[in-house]
Image 1 (tube, rainbow over the protein chains, first blue to last red):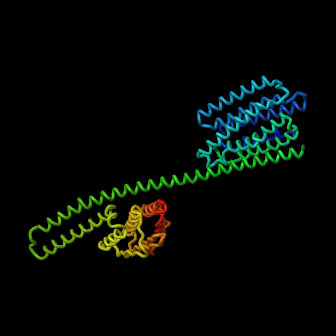
Image 2: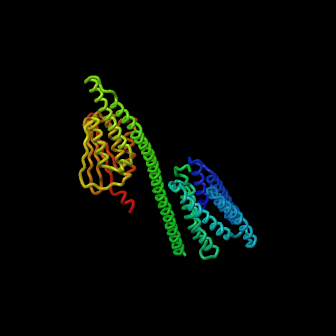
Image 3: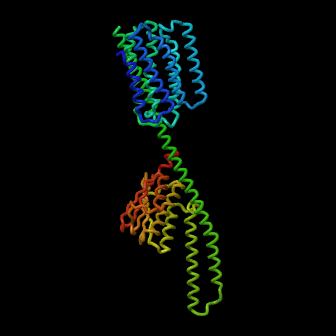
Length: 205
Length: 260
């Protein structure tokens, strides 16, 4: 399904916009991220359909921007000033790492730079683990299944935990790209189901 | 290659299922723990507030008891003595009036001392639950408001002193309700001891009341909140014109269990 990468974020964005919950900074960043994903996928499809240009440059940019969005979303939910500062530094470090990695690896337009992806996934996982830990210690635990960030976290975990080893396998030519793409499509669906559940819950938190 | 993909896919799905199960299990467990803690905290707070209220009330009753015993009773005793020392009565009528007055003062003095005793928790601690209730019943019979009796069945079990005092205050509250509202002629207090429970039945033959109608009084609320403090169950059985029965089931061994 070539359009699945476009349909899924578009559906998530529609559900988010139609949900009657009181939106906060987390939702706003998430909405912008979904919009950015839709634009990115659209341009990628156009490039693939109407030109010989590789869309990998778009995904290289996407791989860093997406993580900056995700970390910013959870940063908005974390109250500890120290951890917020730590996440800000991590975001800056990730950006710097991406620039340096791209500089040394080269070939930015035609190959996917998975090092940033792996580093971003590690930071995102640590952020989500911290968010889960603070959620376990807070009063919000009573209504955790109504919390949008909880479901968004589950969606992201479901996607990024298996996706990163797959990405490494693909880059090391252990598995072929077509097979991996099929698995990624399924993972993408699972991730967005998480988002949809989160934005169809009744909570206003 | 296809088999390899299916294998990887199944592996990923299994990992995800285990991960999601672990997350939900952890969160649900913590959620339950938090809810239990919250309920316990709420109950402890309510208990502490109730205990503080009772402590304050006991302090006030003690002060009233002292005031009755050391001031009012003394003044009446002195007055009785002074009246006795008055000049000799001139005739038989005057003599009768004087003797009646002295007798009445003596009765008032006796009642005040009994009331002072029933209000004072130190006196309660000295006499114990059964004796204090017996004195209360005697006081009621002496006042001739109502004909009261007290009976005990089963083998008596020692009750924690604080709990016994609260039970005594509950019984006093019921007696106060009977005197104020019941228009009853008889009142029975019955203790039935079993190895697990002490059942206290307080029954009058008065006008009863419709339990569903809110009267705005604090009496029944006080009884309920005090019973809650003792983990005791309280039931009211009444219909208009058919008397009022209060049944309290107090779990005897709870203090021992809590301590062990």
